[in-house]
Length: 112
Length: 114
Image 1 (cartoon, chains in turn orange, brown):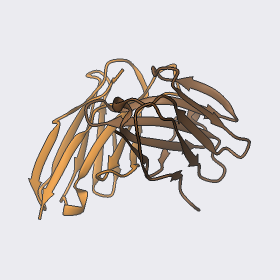
Image 2 (tube, chains in turn brown, cyan; image 1 turned 180 degrees about the horizontal axis):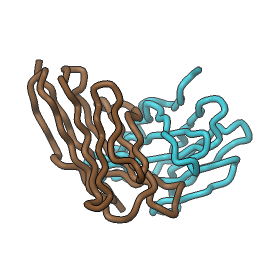
Image 3 (cartoon, one colour; image 1 turned 30 degrees about the vertical axis):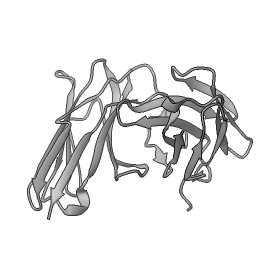
């Protein structure tokens, strides 16, 4: 079953703007991960945030985690056309370290 | 370091046939997971292998099976293909997913069932 739910399902912005995607989940987690997938390709790991962390940065990416609300957000700053892709969150439930549970993804389109 | 390699990249089969997909993980990675991705259902976990043992299994019928070899390469097989099996099949490797680290994905095998 899908635990993560990304919001919005689709997002279209102009190059240079910021893009924010959200992920909600249902159960306690060990960590939450964000991945990117270009059309028809494999997924690429972007960032992992552990349950005891609140914020993490990687280049133009900023991820926040609010365990009290069971939600995470991914912010891409100064977006580029090359950021056009689908973005997925995946959670590792607490107590089960072997099975990531995936959301359905947010499709991001960045117009040049 | 070579990435995860999946073969074939594309294949077309007809209903009732069977198919075998192959995955070579990153050197040194012992865990291999398989996923099915379709537009409507998203990423669905099939199974995970570690040191030739199936360690975790998703909710798929017995037509879907897999195995892992001593060199960590993995294969998955789908028998008696149905139209609904058309999907992108993704393989991912990791050192050991119990460490909750990142997964490294291959480019996928796109299966079309006619």
